[in-house]
Image (cartoon, helix red, strand yellow):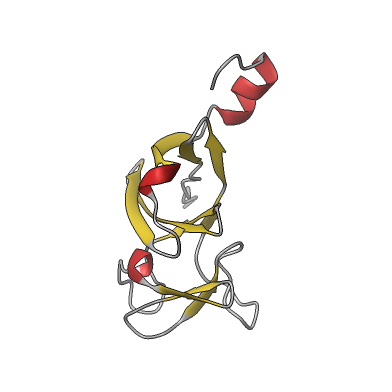
Length: 119
């Protein structure tokens, strides 16, 4: 972040740089590990989306390898569809975790939120 103000620094402090925007191919996913969380990152028409890479169906780590259809990524293992913006399934049921993504100075930054278990 060039010449960032204190407010911008605080706003982006939890974001992690994962790659350059140019290293992402349109309509193809790429897998990253951020703080031990597996993330699938997609570039669709210049927009960047980040979702959990673990399909809830049988816990396969293949979302990054899915194909894009109607604003969704389709898991290649069993065909479950997830909205790229929200991670939700078409019937608006829970699906994948969705993570905020930003492009700053040609680099992609993702903010993952670790789930904390309260026993």
